[in-house]
Image 1 (cartoon, rainbow, N blue to C red):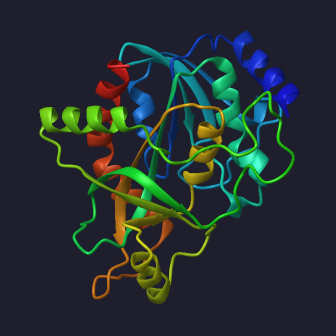
Image 2 (image 1 turned 135 degrees about the horizontal axis):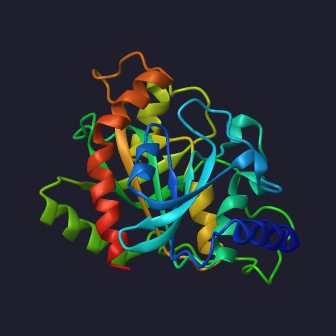
Image 3 (image 1 turned 45 degrees about the vertical axis):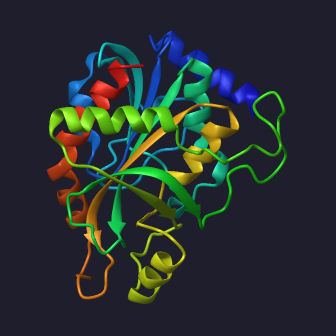
Amino acid sequence: MLEKIIKTADFLRSKGFTDPEAGIVLGTGLGGLTTEIDNQIEVPYAEIPDFPVSTVKGHAGKLIFGDFGGKKVVAMKGRFHYYEGYGSELVTFPIRVMKELGIRALFLSNAAGGVNPTFRIGDIMIIDDHICLVDNPLIGPNDDRIGPRFPDMSVPYDKELIEKAEAVAAGLGIPVTKGVYLSTTGPTFETPAEYRFFRIIGADAVGMSTVPEVITARHMNVPVFAVSIITDLGVEGKIEYTTHESVQQAAEHSEEKMTRIMKELIAAL
């Protein structure tokens, strides 16, 4: 795998992707952050060696390099998911390429269903832990040049970045909460019984992404910060018919606030 990672990173360097300090992955309905990236270089996934192609509406399928918060960043405008038929190596391959390019921290966002009964649609939840109900992306042969066979996951989300994000949000007057994100494969939205189960085992929000990327980043010792936008509610008495389009629309309503937090947080790196 390392040879593929280096090959892809070298291709991107030839396109001008040089020495990014932060990597960003933007989830459903959250791609608008890229409009804040200055001096952009944009490469469609289809042109990048060994990259899969994003097939989900709301995921533009472009890798973007430029200036954000005064730092050089590389941003995925759209991610990959197990439910698209990709294996774990492809789902997480871009994270490994970002590390090879030189990122010092990874910033993730997603649209999620809230199972915490105190949550409301539009809430911004900083993820401080997770529950993985998808295949672990590290299953299979391990390359010790990339990371250890048994990586520690006692601190999956960087505590210092979380503290800084809370301070940034307070300074901007943006309310945020913290919670546990649970990852499923999708692509179905959850049944009421599944929502109840996820809450019982400790989840505050549920989605179909993010956790494999976090595990991969931590395998390479890259600090992670992640945030969920609550786009629908999996709480008894509040469950409504959910579509991908309704999730996109709800995410877009809180996108500007998330972008402001991300920008100041990355500026403080």
